[in-house]
Length: 336
Length: 239
Image (cartoon, rainbow over all chains, first blue to last red; front, side):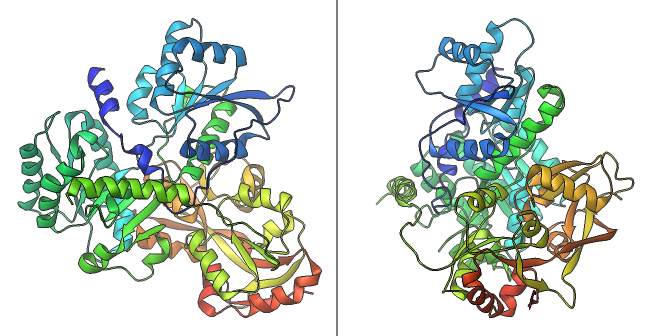
C-alpha cells in the first residue's frame, strides 16, 4: 500500500502538461452548466477539478449521457475535505459517480470508508494507476489514464522506416507490475519490451548505468520513457544524465509528454497522449454498460484508453529514422 | 542558457501557446459545408485539405458524432458530406453520390484475431456512425444479429487497440479499410465477409437549394487523391 501511495505521489506529475496539447484542438470551454434535472432520470454526479482538460472530458461524457441521465457536477479543489465531499454526495443522492483525478478518488475512498452499506458505483477517469487503485475501491471501474506502450510502439512503427521490434524501458520497482502488463500487450504485436529496473530513488549513476545496459547484446530499436518524475526529475537531470546516453543509443525516444518532444527539449522523438474527448466518450460507454448491469461497477473491467494523440519531432524522424510514406496524415501534431 | 532553463522555457512556451490558441470567429459569408466521414486521416488534416481545395466554401470536418449532431441542430450548414445512411437519418436530400468503380456502396467486413464464429453475444468494435442507439440499430441490422454488444470508438484508428486489448471480439470496418489496419498490426487478423453488408458510400447532401450548384461544382472539382481520402473515386449527380 505504501509503495502504491508513493508511486501515485511521484508518478505523472507531468500529466497536467500531457493534456495541454498546444494545437488548439481543445478550445477554452464556456462556464460549466449542468443540464436541468428531469423527474425519473437517474443521476450521475461528476466530481472533478476545474481545468480545461477535465472540462473537455466532462463535455464529451455529458454529451453522450445527457439524454439518458441527469448530471450534477461538483468541483473538487485543494480546499475540498472529505466531509465537504461526502455531504455533497449525500445531498445529491446520485445513482453513480464519475470521479476525475487522484485527489478526487482519494476523497471518495474516504467517503466509502466512512459509510456503511453497499458502496455507490463509480467510474474513474483521468486518474493515474487505476488498476492498482481499484483493489482498494469497491464497486468501481473506469478508464485507465496511462497510454499502453503497445499503442505508442505500433504508432511509432507506422510512422518511421526503421524497424521497431525491441523497446527498452527504465522503471522503478513500484512500476514493475505496470511494465509487466505492457510487456504482455506489446508481445501481441511482436514487440519485445526490455525492462531495466532501477532503485526506488535512483541516482544519476543508476539511470546512466541502466541506459548504458541497452548497448549490450540485442540493441534496442526504441526507448520508452515513463512519466515518472523520479526518473526525469528536472531539466538539469535530463541535460546531464539522459541526453548524452540517448544520443549515444541513437534510437527514437517515446515519451508521454508533448513538451519533451519540442525542439527546445531535445529529448523525445514521439509522444503519445490520451485523446481527451474520446476518453470522455469511452467513460460514458463504461457508464452505460454499468447501468445496464444493475450498477455493478466492480464487475466491469478497467478499460485501457483506446484513443490517443501523437506528437512527432519531425526533424528527428527525418534525420535519423526515416518517415514512412503517407505517415504524416496520421500525426496529430508535428514539431519541426 | 542551461538545459534546465531551456526546458523550463519550453514548458512555459507550450503552456502559453495553449492559452493563446482560441477558435477563430467572425462573419464569413461563404456557404458552409460540414463533413463527417471516417477516414485514415486526422480530422484536422482532412479539413485543411478540403478547405484548400474548396476555397469558396467554409469547411468544417467533425471527428465526433455528437459534435456533428449538435452542429446540425444549432448551426445548420448549407450542405453536408457524410456517408449515405447518416444523410438519410438526418433527412438531408442527396445532391451528389460518391462512387467507387460503378458502385455507390461498399462492403463491410469483420476483422478479428480469432475466427469470429457465431456472432450472437459477441462484442463488436465500430466507429460511431449514428450515435449510440443509431449505431446499435445499424450494426445489428447489418450483421443480422440482435444481441450484439458494441464498443463504439471515435476514430477508425481506435479500432485496432480494441483488438490489441481484447476489448472486442471483432471490429466492423469497410472492406477498403482492412489494408490500413492489417498494415499497422502484427496481430493474426482474419477477415470475415458478411453477406449483403452493403453500406452507402459518402454522399453530398444539400440543405440550402440556393447554393446547390456551387456545392456540386466544388465537390466535383476535387482531385483524385482528395476523393480517395473521402473514400470515393468520383461523384454522380442525383436527381
